[in-house]
Length: 257
Image (tube, rainbow, N blue to C red):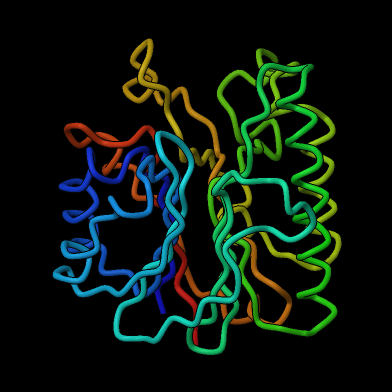
């Protein structure tokens, strides 16, 4: 089973890119972030025509998450991260597909640091850790997947010394990522490629993609009940080079089921 995540950075503006990639890569399950579209503007007709059913939580202008499934039923669990009923940002959607809990997330960026946006990021991470702990405790086959807006290690960013006071690389968020791993969540891509330089995001500025001056922000974390089935995975780096593409590239894994 092939499972992927892709921050599309505007699903309607980049719909041709998304559809081209879906046809080429043929993932079974796809988690999308940063739809940048209200609920009624989700391109369901085109997604269905590509062979996928979908659930989504849109939001005008920013945010927005979705889960797509090919040939498998989607049962929605919740469309917000528990713990703060006043949080109206569309950053989390959870579903059950083929007896797996799929937690699609778009973790807050947090910049500028310091400030209220960084404080919101830390509070969001605390809520995510609570939900992650529940899934581990319940011994469920689960995946935390999406744009984490966290650079876990120096090897995950071009010139890490430039990022020490950025919300993506701050000690607090990197520590939280490591704590998830200590609780049993497997960083699938880094596990498959322990020594390689792997990026999932390249800024539009300064020819970052051409210079491979990127960072690894998009992650697929597996619970202990799925991690033994990890077979392969990677980043579809070439998609970032397509015309009018997102500044992120799709990330995928193959699970033995």
